[in-house]
Length: 204
Length: 252
Image 1 (cartoon, rainbow over the protein chains, first blue to last red):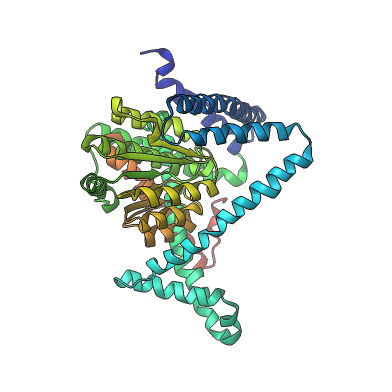
Image 2: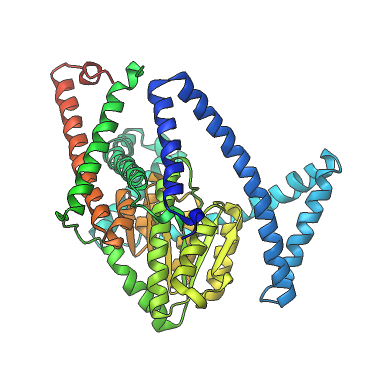
């Protein structure tokens, strides 16, 4: 096996970063804190290098797609066009860049996000169909909380506000904390499995 | 010098490390714990099998969570399950597709897993990368409407795209398996998916499906650690009933 494909290397990198972060956080040791800050700088550098390699990979992928006339290849021209336009706009001054980004891209993005409302409504309909006892409880809790967040409900019947507040602060909070504690323990488990070399998902 | 306010947390961290290492080596030596059946994981075969029977594709998404910070563990668990689902799909000839969003670093890992599963049958079109959440929304709603997937896996650190991906899958008539540890997305997963993996179930899933002794041992250690945390919570609660500030006594 080539030395660059050895599993020990990513485990060693993870272990060094892990212990530097832990020592820096718990002991506030000046050397560990400085190393931690240095590591954060490396993250920025590696992210930018990855951006460059990502651009090359994107260019090669879409060039191949066009040359082979693969399915959906005309969209590859759109990508090259968009890259060229944004590249030119970047060096053409803030007005054109701002116009392209704030007046076109942001608005199109917001318009797309607005469609999520329709998905949420049909999702709510699907969720609130009473098929069993669990679904009935979900529907009741959902119905009470919808009334709680509607302005009319609080003003018309102020004394009932205690019910949704109780749902949010007692069973909701308890279940939520249970999930958060479970996730925290699971995160520690994954970190230890990586350190011991048993977790392999991050190396592909 | 150990920071005074973090001393209890550090002791708990060291204790948890010791517990995990003990239970992992105990399992490696042969004492393997019995893990309860998790319906969401045993359903993988059924869901992918249905896709082959109907001749429709399988779609997998790990959400927009990255491989850094608090999302790391959930995204990694999602990738572990991606490897498992890809292998099952390749074994029975299902059309498996992965939609990666925002987290570009997950793409080469996922590609490698799918290539390993499919070998010479791998096609680059099996992995799609979309750079933003709104783009994911457009990609998923359009693709699912056209392709009508039979199976939709949504497993990882999920944000507001959960409702879009799951609802698009439900509209397409897909059987869905969802899972996340992100609190505010759990209701969407529970209400829109046929099977759900909530909180630590997702993080334990990779270990569960691999069947590796060491990984099963780590699940046992998680349970013991949880029991210690519950016991600690009860002591703090009883202390507060009797007027004692236990966290202060413990230096928390």
